[in-house]
Amino acid sequence: MENVFFKHRQKLGEMLVEGDMAIVFAGFAPKSTADAHYDFKTNKNFFYLTGLKQEHFKLVMIKRQNALEETLFIEKPDKKKKKWVGRKLKKEVATEI
Image 1 (cartoon, rainbow, N blue to C red):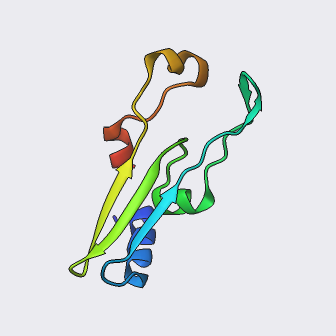
Image 2: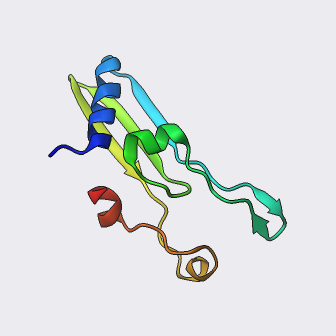
């Protein structure tokens, strides 16, 4: 069974022409004070294409030779930050989703 998010990326890819690039950011939680942040809300376009709800992730899609290249840039896990903001998705889990 094909992943619905894969289908969404393919649909976008069909609209791109040779040499086009699409860059979509997940977004980030803005600061409310010097040491606190508002709740994070994923960019709707990023979620539509990936199904991921993680801050600072980026999706890059490039149409080359009539094929779609997709690269997902993820934030490296930070052990110190994890206890304050929670665990980040690892590369393998993000790729699976």
